[in-house]
Image (cartoon, rainbow, N blue to C red; front, top):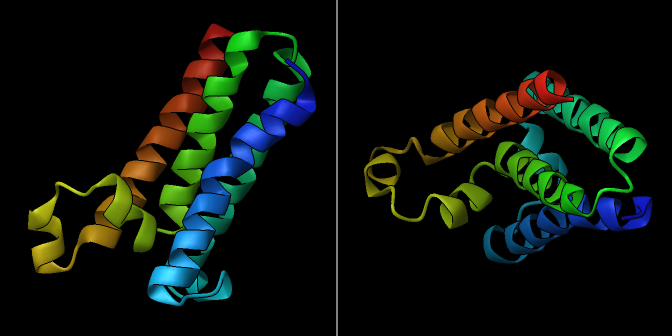
Length: 124
């Protein structure tokens, strides 16, 4: 597995989330940083560090495409919490009914990203 494939796997969910968000919700990338700006910037930094670690240590492993894809999905869930949360958490009517769908998507994305980074460090 080469570095380019890992980068494409990481960016694919982000591109899908940006496309869906800009077409369905008419929100730009900057509009998503109005709420939880620091948390979203920290998530971007943590996921980029994770991606760089994957590129350095596991770029030859053919199974490393799935962790890169999963990290991109979790980052999309954090950054595009309103629109991508609707796609991922489609069966969570309770959250959308009370207006907490974007909060739930943000929290689930962070928990998943932290778990993925910690488990990668422990099993490395």
